[in-house]
Image (cartoon, rainbow, N blue to C red; front, side):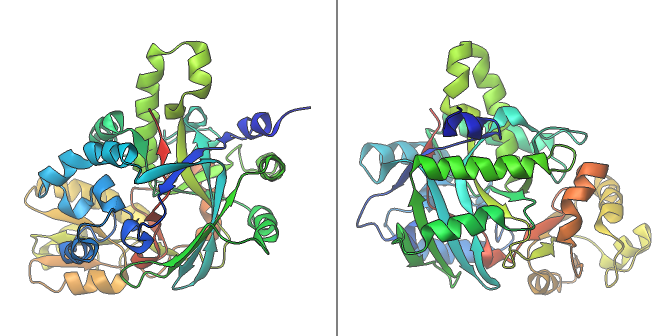
Length: 390
């Protein structure tokens, strides 16, 4: 009879050894939203920095995209902060297990399961047939910098969310029954009016076995062999894959089987979770004549064509206009507000059909980059749990 570990390996998963802030640390100050949020709003991150002050925080372990090229001292210090937090006990190992978070959002309580996925089972190529697949185009040029950061980092701290096509809610429903009556491992309000976070730490082998069994059922019913679809953090996961492909070259076959860099820590989320609202990611052009852009490309920004048609046209136009910048904005009102300046153009879409995502990827391959966002900006994943990767 197979063990839970062997069954999980059969569905590309593994149980991680998790790190967590030591007792007494203010979790509201430690947990910080995903680095790719508020990328055009430096003022958000300035408020976050002021709120945290000198307290231990995941802000020291990541680089907000809003600061890229502007805060080199912070970016360069990230690996050292990781090592310091490990050495001084700020981050402590809580053992082998899966975390079952309930994330309070503006649209309800979203459930997830934190575990490790096998990077050997992931291929971000547009025509991939792997167990784990990208949903949006992976930009190769964005990977080297991320790979370089990961190669120096002693730990990973994910904002990666991976989708399951679980219409009957088998996995999260079963975990809800297990968590009922148990005290959560943590329960606190998030900073910046971003809702709440509660999590149960699951360590029993019978629970791992049950998770493996449900994932095996979903795999058997999957479209074209795709069990997992990347939601948020695709480039981070792709960088982890690239790093592993380089790292494994110097390992023996036995070492490759269990090396921590072979796996990526992710949060699984059910595509059909009622609190998981998909929204289109909007476009903001900066340093342009808004009327000229629309005239050149033959579209009306107030009623834009589908993103999958417009993005290639925008890419070609941007190649011919290097002075222009393109930002990806989460939140229609934020995009409209940022687009009010005379040299800007906001392009906003009304909806994204999440229920067709798995079938579309299985039939047609990946979407263009930054096609959708899972929830509004304040509802994104916050950094909290970590895992050693060296």
